Image 1 (cartoon, rainbow, N blue to C red):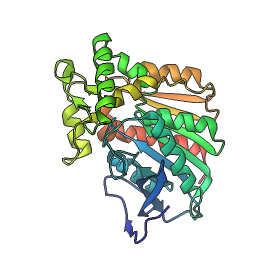
Image 2: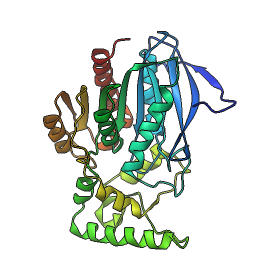
Image 3: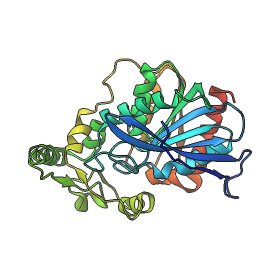
Image 4: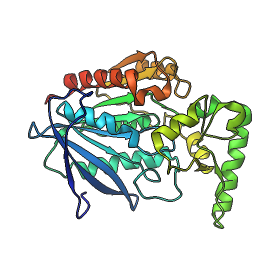
Length: 316
């Protein structure tokens, strides 16, 4: 699970993030589908066997770097937090880059858990999954099949790739299907076809996965200057295949859903429907947009609700 020559970075939390514990960080890797996935474990100096929170996700088609502040806050509160990048994104391997595949993301969740559960320095019998955006769907699916999972936090959840695409209308769906098929055919001869991950507004978005006002700037701020705004068009096909109802089972563990009432990427209605269908779910509505959950008041409130959920679900 650990890279040879990994360095541990001792650190604390900045003054604006009140903490009770100092924590160390170490870079970890694991294999999923034959490829290397990378993440970072944030471990508090006490207790000796802290409960484990596994985080993944962020803006669709980008890496999990925006989740580092979440992991820091959790570690400062006494929880071990492992934040990792899915294959094809961030610091993880996998070509083509920025490929969005809910099926692969679920496999990455499972591979991450397998690696973490082989460690002896975290309480793997008290594990909570924390999925942001599309990753929330994978977290719920894994929890439905893995009795070791004690709870799930689903923040700004995109629970169905198909429903996510349907919001864009019939014209977008038709164009996306053609682009996806074109990509599959051309990729076979080494000429993949890509579409933008993000664009501002419907008119400029064409076949971008995310096309809402201000989205481009938010991605630049969150993903960094080196991130490339393109994804294989087959990502559209993968999202269409993802209905969110692939498994008849639902997680029986406690679930916290946190959505924004002004979210124009992941509708609060979907989170409300999920809360109604799950046997043990709590829904928190925050007056925030989709990208507000990575900084500022919405981020802080989401963390506070998450910590209250963790305190009630897994004891430290």
